[in-house]
Image (cartoon, rainbow, N blue to C red):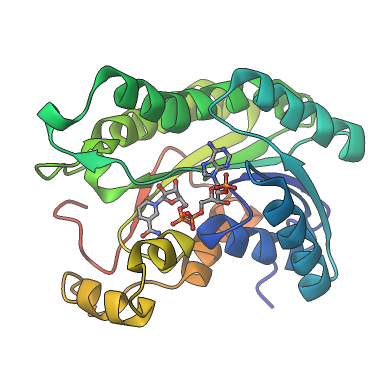
Length: 257
Ligand SMILES: NC(=O)c1ccc[n+]([C@@H]2O[C@H](COP(=O)([O-])OP(=O)(O)OC[C@H]3O[C@@H](n4cnc5c(N)ncnc54)[C@H](OP(=O)(O)O)[C@@H]3O)[C@@H](O)[C@H]2O)c1
């Protein structure tokens, strides 16, 4: 039996109503975690929470929040504490694609990406790490992208903000190791999620996935559940000696390890 040892842990997953975050919420709820999910669209979020509870029999709290707003991070943490009285696990997962060339990205777009992909994690970690410390430890996973390690042309601002996220991971891992708070990054390649359903538009999404597969050495796009498995492992007791890493989950796409 490969027990992850996270039953009863309290986990916040940002962007938990769709795609990779939702798959992670299902996985952690099935492991017996008390799960908090947030996203901006309240109705969609509430429906996701209901569906995850039905599927797993677990406890899932939905808190509408835009993680790019400081006041919403406060709402998220306060709502979690009111219901569960603690936080053990944080998954900074909410995000969206933002890949263009330098001259096509204005200051507002840079700021939006920084708020969503850096400041959201900074603020949520700053609020929850003292809680984890008091509880004797914790685990944080920051979602990033392989371009954060090996930026191609035309991937701004995301490759820069993700590189900062990888640095934030290592900085926090160093700063809080003595408090038994582990911090890791997952660098994502191409994984099935709602963002691709939207991008497919009028086409069948499977057609899009089949085109995308040609870019992947393993010859296919990843499954959201495979991301969830990696995240669940990283926050688990089985990964108790792993901190400060940036693990690629990309079917071999990244040019760097
Ligand atoms: N799937 C991939 O191939 C891939 C590749 C590279 C990186 N990633 C990264 O992986 C993470 C998950 O992506 P995904 O593919 O699962 O996307 P997705 O299917 O579009 O899901 C995104 C989730 O995040 C929420 N969200 C977006 N902006 C938010 C905000 N400002 N505040 C709170 N919640 C927010 C969305 O709900 P609302 O819209 O209701 O807020 C939704 O629940 C993102 O950080 C993404 O950049 C994914």
